[in-house]
Length: 396
Image (tube, rainbow, N blue to C red; front, side, top):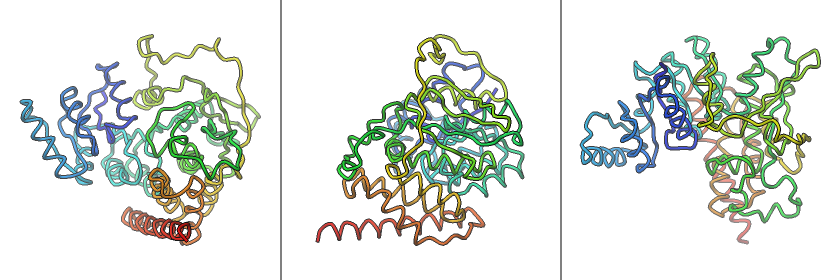
Protein backbone atom coordinates (compact mmCIF):
# COMPACT_ATOMS: atom_id res chain seq x y z
CA UNK A 1 0.00 0.00 0.00
CA UNK A 2 1.20 3.51 -0.85
CA UNK A 3 1.23 5.75 2.22
CA UNK A 4 0.84 9.35 1.15
CA UNK A 5 1.88 12.80 2.22
CA UNK A 6 -0.01 15.39 0.17
CA UNK A 7 1.62 18.82 0.00
CA UNK A 8 -1.01 21.28 -1.16
CA UNK A 9 -3.96 19.14 -0.08
CA UNK A 10 -6.55 21.92 -0.35
CA UNK A 11 -5.63 22.89 -3.92
CA UNK A 12 -6.97 21.36 -7.13
CA UNK A 13 -4.26 18.66 -7.34
CA UNK A 14 -4.73 17.88 -3.66
CA UNK A 15 -8.48 17.44 -4.07
CA UNK A 16 -7.97 15.26 -7.15
CA UNK A 17 -5.43 13.12 -5.28
CA UNK A 18 -7.85 12.62 -2.40
CA UNK A 19 -10.52 11.66 -4.94
CA UNK A 20 -8.21 8.89 -6.18
CA UNK A 21 -7.67 7.78 -2.58
CA UNK A 22 -11.45 7.66 -2.18
CA UNK A 23 -11.78 5.43 -5.24
CA UNK A 24 -8.93 3.07 -4.27
CA UNK A 25 -8.88 2.82 -0.46
CA UNK A 26 -7.15 -0.57 -0.60
CA UNK A 27 -4.18 0.95 -2.45
CA UNK A 28 -3.65 4.42 -0.97
CA UNK A 29 -3.62 5.62 2.63
CA UNK A 30 -3.44 9.30 3.60
CA UNK A 31 -0.81 9.74 6.32
CA UNK A 32 -0.17 13.50 6.34
CA UNK A 33 -1.36 16.73 4.74
CA UNK A 34 0.01 20.22 4.15
CA UNK A 35 -2.96 22.53 3.73
CA UNK A 36 -1.67 26.11 3.51
CA UNK A 37 -4.23 28.75 4.51
CA UNK A 38 -7.61 27.18 3.69
CA UNK A 39 -8.65 26.30 7.22
CA UNK A 40 -12.21 25.21 6.40
CA UNK A 41 -11.02 22.73 3.79
CA UNK A 42 -8.22 21.58 6.12
CA UNK A 43 -10.75 20.92 8.88
CA UNK A 44 -13.01 18.98 6.51
CA UNK A 45 -10.04 16.89 5.35
CA UNK A 46 -9.13 16.12 8.95
CA UNK A 47 -12.68 14.92 9.62
CA UNK A 48 -12.68 12.70 6.53
CA UNK A 49 -9.11 11.37 6.41
CA UNK A 50 -7.87 11.57 10.01
CA UNK A 51 -4.23 12.17 9.00
CA UNK A 52 -1.48 11.60 11.52
CA UNK A 53 -0.14 15.13 10.90
CA UNK A 54 -1.44 18.26 9.18
CA UNK A 55 0.48 21.47 8.54
CA UNK A 56 -0.89 24.97 7.99
CA UNK A 57 0.87 28.11 6.81
CA UNK A 58 1.00 30.01 10.10
CA UNK A 59 1.01 29.40 13.84
CA UNK A 60 -2.29 31.27 14.21
CA UNK A 61 -4.02 29.07 11.63
CA UNK A 62 -2.61 25.95 13.28
CA UNK A 63 -3.94 27.09 16.66
CA UNK A 64 -7.39 27.76 15.18
CA UNK A 65 -7.51 24.33 13.55
CA UNK A 66 -6.37 22.64 16.75
CA UNK A 67 -9.20 24.36 18.64
CA UNK A 68 -11.78 23.26 16.07
CA UNK A 69 -10.49 19.68 16.12
CA UNK A 70 -10.67 19.53 19.92
CA UNK A 71 -14.23 20.89 19.80
CA UNK A 72 -15.05 18.03 17.41
CA UNK A 73 -13.53 15.52 19.83
CA UNK A 74 -10.44 14.84 17.69
CA UNK A 75 -7.16 14.87 19.62
CA UNK A 76 -5.12 12.33 17.66
CA UNK A 77 -3.98 14.67 14.86
CA UNK A 78 -0.69 16.54 15.24
CA UNK A 79 -1.07 20.11 13.94
CA UNK A 80 2.11 21.90 12.83
CA UNK A 81 2.85 25.02 10.79
CA UNK A 82 5.22 26.84 8.48
CA UNK A 83 8.03 25.49 6.35
CA UNK A 84 9.27 23.28 9.18
CA UNK A 85 5.78 21.83 9.52
CA UNK A 86 5.54 21.06 5.81
CA UNK A 87 8.95 19.37 5.91
CA UNK A 88 7.74 17.30 8.87
CA UNK A 89 4.64 16.26 6.88
CA UNK A 90 6.81 15.24 3.91
CA UNK A 91 9.41 13.25 5.82
CA UNK A 92 7.40 11.15 8.28
CA UNK A 93 8.97 7.67 8.48
CA UNK A 94 5.79 5.84 7.47
CA UNK A 95 5.26 7.99 4.34
CA UNK A 96 6.58 6.35 1.17
CA UNK A 97 5.03 8.61 -1.50
CA UNK A 98 4.89 12.41 -1.46
CA UNK A 99 2.57 14.36 -3.76
CA UNK A 100 4.28 17.74 -4.23
CA UNK A 101 1.52 20.15 -5.25
CA UNK A 102 2.24 23.39 -3.40
CA UNK A 103 2.32 26.17 -5.98
CA UNK A 104 5.53 28.15 -6.36
CA UNK A 105 8.85 28.05 -4.55
CA UNK A 106 6.95 27.61 -1.26
CA UNK A 107 6.99 23.86 -1.87
CA UNK A 108 10.70 23.64 -2.70
CA UNK A 109 12.25 22.96 0.71
CA UNK A 110 9.75 20.27 1.66
CA UNK A 111 10.10 18.54 -1.71
CA UNK A 112 13.89 18.59 -1.47
CA UNK A 113 13.70 17.23 2.09
CA UNK A 114 11.40 14.44 0.93
CA UNK A 115 13.83 13.49 -1.84
CA UNK A 116 16.72 13.44 0.65
CA UNK A 117 14.57 11.25 2.92
CA UNK A 118 14.20 8.71 0.10
CA UNK A 119 10.50 9.24 -0.61
CA UNK A 120 9.06 8.61 -4.07
CA UNK A 121 7.83 11.96 -5.43
CA UNK A 122 4.72 12.64 -7.47
CA UNK A 123 5.72 16.05 -8.81
CA UNK A 124 2.96 18.53 -9.62
CA UNK A 125 5.00 21.55 -8.52
CA UNK A 126 6.87 22.49 -11.69
CA UNK A 127 8.60 25.42 -9.97
CA UNK A 128 10.76 22.96 -8.01
CA UNK A 129 12.48 21.80 -11.18
CA UNK A 130 12.41 25.23 -12.81
CA UNK A 131 14.17 26.90 -9.88
CA UNK A 132 16.23 24.05 -8.43
CA UNK A 133 16.19 21.29 -11.02
CA UNK A 134 19.89 20.45 -10.92
CA UNK A 135 19.92 20.20 -7.12
CA UNK A 136 16.76 18.10 -6.91
CA UNK A 137 17.83 15.75 -9.69
CA UNK A 138 21.25 15.29 -8.08
CA UNK A 139 19.61 14.49 -4.74
CA UNK A 140 17.18 12.08 -6.42
CA UNK A 141 20.10 10.25 -8.04
CA UNK A 142 22.04 10.15 -4.76
CA UNK A 143 19.09 8.76 -2.79
CA UNK A 144 17.75 6.53 -5.59
CA UNK A 145 14.43 8.37 -5.64
CA UNK A 146 11.90 8.23 -8.48
CA UNK A 147 10.51 11.60 -9.63
CA UNK A 148 7.17 10.86 -11.29
CA UNK A 149 5.61 13.83 -13.12
CA UNK A 150 1.98 14.64 -12.41
CA UNK A 151 1.80 17.58 -14.83
CA UNK A 152 -0.35 16.14 -17.62
CA UNK A 153 2.18 16.92 -20.37
CA UNK A 154 5.23 15.44 -18.64
CA UNK A 155 3.17 12.54 -17.42
CA UNK A 156 2.19 11.90 -21.05
CA UNK A 157 5.85 12.03 -22.14
CA UNK A 158 6.76 9.62 -19.33
CA UNK A 159 4.13 7.19 -20.60
CA UNK A 160 5.27 7.51 -24.23
CA UNK A 161 8.91 6.95 -23.27
CA UNK A 162 7.97 3.50 -22.01
CA UNK A 163 7.78 2.65 -25.72
CA UNK A 164 11.46 3.37 -26.39
CA UNK A 165 14.81 4.31 -24.87
CA UNK A 166 16.14 7.82 -24.26
CA UNK A 167 18.77 7.31 -26.98
CA UNK A 168 15.99 6.70 -29.50
CA UNK A 169 14.26 10.04 -28.83
CA UNK A 170 14.65 12.76 -31.45
CA UNK A 171 12.50 15.34 -29.68
CA UNK A 172 9.41 15.70 -27.54
CA UNK A 173 6.35 17.81 -28.18
CA UNK A 174 4.42 19.49 -25.38
CA UNK A 175 0.89 20.45 -26.36
CA UNK A 176 -0.86 23.64 -25.27
CA UNK A 177 -4.46 24.70 -25.70
CA UNK A 178 -3.33 28.23 -26.54
CA UNK A 179 -5.49 29.58 -23.74
CA UNK A 180 -8.39 32.00 -24.12
CA UNK A 181 -6.47 34.47 -26.32
CA UNK A 182 -5.00 32.35 -29.09
CA UNK A 183 -7.26 34.09 -31.63
CA UNK A 184 -7.62 37.48 -29.93
CA UNK A 185 -6.28 40.41 -32.01
CA UNK A 186 -2.91 41.59 -30.67
CA UNK A 187 -4.25 45.14 -30.52
CA UNK A 188 -6.59 44.04 -27.70
CA UNK A 189 -3.92 42.43 -25.49
CA UNK A 190 -3.11 45.60 -23.52
CA UNK A 191 -6.74 45.78 -22.36
CA UNK A 192 -7.23 42.13 -21.35
CA UNK A 193 -8.75 41.95 -17.86
CA UNK A 194 -8.05 39.41 -15.10
CA UNK A 195 -11.62 38.16 -15.44
CA UNK A 196 -11.07 37.39 -19.13
CA UNK A 197 -7.70 35.75 -18.49
CA UNK A 198 -9.12 33.48 -15.79
CA UNK A 199 -11.52 31.83 -18.26
CA UNK A 200 -9.45 28.88 -19.48
CA UNK A 201 -11.14 27.00 -22.36
CA UNK A 202 -10.19 23.49 -21.20
CA UNK A 203 -8.81 23.08 -17.67
CA UNK A 204 -10.08 24.14 -14.24
CA UNK A 205 -7.03 25.31 -12.27
CA UNK A 206 -5.81 27.77 -9.66
CA UNK A 207 -5.52 31.48 -10.46
CA UNK A 208 -1.78 31.74 -11.07
CA UNK A 209 -1.55 28.70 -13.33
CA UNK A 210 -4.62 29.90 -15.26
CA UNK A 211 -2.98 33.26 -15.96
CA UNK A 212 0.28 31.47 -16.79
CA UNK A 213 -1.67 29.39 -19.30
CA UNK A 214 -3.12 32.54 -20.86
CA UNK A 215 0.40 33.99 -21.33
CA UNK A 216 1.85 30.54 -22.16
CA UNK A 217 4.40 31.01 -19.38
CA UNK A 218 3.03 27.78 -17.96
CA UNK A 219 4.16 26.02 -21.14
CA UNK A 220 7.51 27.76 -20.82
CA UNK A 221 7.94 26.38 -17.31
CA UNK A 222 7.01 22.96 -18.68
CA UNK A 223 9.74 23.26 -21.33
CA UNK A 224 12.33 23.86 -18.60
CA UNK A 225 10.89 21.06 -16.48
CA UNK A 226 10.98 18.68 -19.45
CA UNK A 227 14.61 19.58 -20.22
CA UNK A 228 15.51 18.54 -16.69
CA UNK A 229 13.24 15.55 -16.24
CA UNK A 230 14.17 13.96 -19.56
CA UNK A 231 17.74 15.31 -19.91
CA UNK A 232 17.14 17.11 -23.20
CA UNK A 233 18.34 20.49 -24.49
CA UNK A 234 15.66 23.14 -25.01
CA UNK A 235 16.00 22.81 -28.80
CA UNK A 236 14.64 19.24 -28.55
CA UNK A 237 11.63 20.19 -26.42
CA UNK A 238 9.07 21.61 -28.84
CA UNK A 239 5.68 23.17 -28.19
CA UNK A 240 2.56 23.06 -30.32
CA UNK A 241 -0.88 24.64 -30.03
CA UNK A 242 -3.50 21.91 -29.81
CA UNK A 243 -6.89 23.50 -28.99
CA UNK A 244 -8.71 20.21 -28.32
CA UNK A 245 -6.32 19.33 -25.43
CA UNK A 246 -6.88 15.68 -26.26
CA UNK A 247 -3.27 14.79 -27.07
CA UNK A 248 -1.32 15.69 -23.94
CA UNK A 249 2.18 15.24 -25.37
CA UNK A 250 4.04 13.42 -28.12
CA UNK A 251 7.45 11.76 -28.36
CA UNK A 252 9.15 11.72 -31.76
CA UNK A 253 11.73 8.96 -32.21
CA UNK A 254 14.78 8.92 -34.48
CA UNK A 255 13.12 6.53 -36.95
CA UNK A 256 10.31 9.03 -37.60
CA UNK A 257 7.72 7.32 -35.39
CA UNK A 258 5.66 9.51 -33.08
CA UNK A 259 3.90 8.20 -29.99
CA UNK A 260 1.09 10.31 -28.52
CA UNK A 261 -0.77 10.01 -25.24
CA UNK A 262 -4.51 10.66 -25.52
CA UNK A 263 -6.91 10.85 -22.59
CA UNK A 264 -9.69 12.86 -21.02
CA UNK A 265 -8.74 16.27 -19.62
CA UNK A 266 -8.92 15.21 -16.00
CA UNK A 267 -5.95 15.54 -13.63
CA UNK A 268 -7.02 12.41 -11.76
CA UNK A 269 -5.62 10.32 -14.62
CA UNK A 270 -1.98 11.51 -14.45
CA UNK A 271 -2.20 11.44 -10.65
CA UNK A 272 -3.39 7.83 -10.75
CA UNK A 273 -0.64 6.92 -13.22
CA UNK A 274 2.02 8.39 -10.92
CA UNK A 275 0.57 6.79 -7.79
CA UNK A 276 0.26 3.35 -9.42
CA UNK A 277 3.57 3.35 -11.32
CA UNK A 278 5.01 1.01 -12.53
CA UNK A 279 1.59 -0.69 -12.57
CA UNK A 280 -1.57 0.52 -14.25
CA UNK A 281 -4.76 0.45 -12.24
CA UNK A 282 -8.05 -0.45 -13.91
CA UNK A 283 -10.69 2.27 -13.64
CA UNK A 284 -14.44 1.81 -13.75
CA UNK A 285 -17.26 3.89 -15.20
CA UNK A 286 -17.64 5.38 -11.73
CA UNK A 287 -14.34 7.28 -12.11
CA UNK A 288 -15.37 8.68 -15.55
CA UNK A 289 -11.77 8.56 -16.80
CA UNK A 290 -12.24 6.58 -20.00
CA UNK A 291 -11.99 8.27 -23.40
CA UNK A 292 -14.48 7.56 -26.19
CA UNK A 293 -12.48 7.57 -29.43
CA UNK A 294 -15.67 7.78 -31.49
CA UNK A 295 -16.13 11.36 -30.26
CA UNK A 296 -12.77 12.36 -31.73
CA UNK A 297 -13.44 14.07 -35.05
CA UNK A 298 -10.53 16.47 -35.42
CA UNK A 299 -7.01 17.09 -34.09
CA UNK A 300 -5.40 20.47 -34.82
CA UNK A 301 -1.75 21.38 -34.26
CA UNK A 302 -0.03 24.69 -35.00
CA UNK A 303 3.14 26.53 -34.10
CA UNK A 304 2.85 29.07 -31.24
CA UNK A 305 3.30 32.71 -32.22
CA UNK A 306 6.08 34.11 -30.01
CA UNK A 307 4.90 37.65 -30.75
CA UNK A 308 1.54 36.75 -29.25
CA UNK A 309 3.17 34.77 -26.43
CA UNK A 310 6.44 36.52 -25.46
CA UNK A 311 6.51 34.66 -22.13
CA UNK A 312 7.17 31.42 -24.01
CA UNK A 313 10.14 33.05 -25.77
CA UNK A 314 11.49 34.27 -22.42
CA UNK A 315 11.22 30.76 -20.98
CA UNK A 316 13.22 29.27 -23.85
CA UNK A 317 15.85 31.97 -23.38
CA UNK A 318 16.04 31.23 -19.64
CA UNK A 319 16.33 27.50 -20.35
CA UNK A 320 19.29 28.19 -22.63
CA UNK A 321 20.92 30.58 -20.14
CA UNK A 322 20.46 28.28 -17.14
CA UNK A 323 21.77 29.27 -13.71
CA UNK A 324 19.78 31.95 -11.94
CA UNK A 325 17.81 32.85 -15.08
CA UNK A 326 15.23 30.13 -14.46
CA UNK A 327 14.88 31.16 -10.82
CA UNK A 328 14.36 34.78 -11.85
CA UNK A 329 11.86 33.75 -14.54
CA UNK A 330 9.66 31.98 -12.01
CA UNK A 331 9.96 34.61 -9.28
CA UNK A 332 9.31 37.56 -11.59
CA UNK A 333 6.33 35.78 -13.13
CA UNK A 334 4.76 35.11 -9.73
CA UNK A 335 5.08 38.77 -8.71
CA UNK A 336 3.89 40.05 -12.11
CA UNK A 337 0.87 37.74 -12.21
CA UNK A 338 -0.15 38.85 -8.71
CA UNK A 339 0.15 42.49 -9.78
CA UNK A 340 -1.98 41.81 -12.87
CA UNK A 341 -4.67 40.07 -10.80
CA UNK A 342 -4.70 43.07 -8.46
CA UNK A 343 -5.18 45.40 -11.45
CA UNK A 344 -1.81 47.11 -10.91
CA UNK A 345 -0.28 46.21 -14.29
CA UNK A 346 -1.70 45.27 -17.67
CA UNK A 347 -1.67 41.81 -19.25
CA UNK A 348 1.31 42.84 -21.40
CA UNK A 349 2.95 44.21 -18.26
CA UNK A 350 3.58 40.60 -17.22
CA UNK A 351 6.15 39.78 -19.96
CA UNK A 352 7.58 43.31 -19.79
CA UNK A 353 8.29 42.88 -16.08
CA UNK A 354 9.81 39.43 -16.52
CA UNK A 355 12.05 40.48 -19.42
CA UNK A 356 13.42 43.44 -17.46
CA UNK A 357 14.15 41.25 -14.42
CA UNK A 358 15.93 38.68 -16.61
CA UNK A 359 18.13 41.41 -18.05
CA UNK A 360 19.20 42.31 -14.49
CA UNK A 361 19.94 38.70 -13.47
CA UNK A 362 23.37 37.08 -13.35
CA UNK A 363 23.80 33.65 -14.92
CA UNK A 364 25.60 31.82 -12.11
CA UNK A 365 24.19 28.48 -10.93
CA UNK A 366 23.01 28.01 -7.33
CA UNK A 367 25.11 25.61 -5.26
CA UNK A 368 22.49 24.94 -2.58
CA UNK A 369 18.79 25.29 -1.81
CA UNK A 370 19.70 28.36 0.26
CA UNK A 371 21.27 29.90 -2.86
CA UNK A 372 18.06 29.19 -4.77
CA UNK A 373 15.94 30.88 -2.09
CA UNK A 374 18.29 33.88 -1.97
CA UNK A 375 18.16 34.27 -5.76
CA UNK A 376 14.38 33.91 -5.63
CA UNK A 377 14.07 36.70 -3.05
CA UNK A 378 16.38 38.96 -5.06
CA UNK A 379 14.37 38.41 -8.25
CA UNK A 380 11.10 39.11 -6.44
CA UNK A 381 12.50 42.36 -5.07
CA UNK A 382 13.68 43.30 -8.55
CA UNK A 383 10.25 42.53 -10.02
CA UNK A 384 8.53 44.71 -7.41
CA UNK A 385 10.87 47.58 -8.27
CA UNK A 386 10.18 47.16 -11.99
CA UNK A 387 6.42 47.18 -11.36
CA UNK A 388 6.70 50.25 -9.13
CA UNK A 389 8.52 52.06 -11.94
CA UNK A 390 5.79 51.02 -14.39
CA UNK A 391 3.13 52.43 -12.05
CA UNK A 392 5.06 55.66 -11.53
CA UNK A 393 5.46 56.08 -15.29
CA UNK A 394 1.76 55.40 -15.89
CA UNK A 395 0.76 58.07 -13.36
CA UNK A 396 2.81 60.83 -15.03
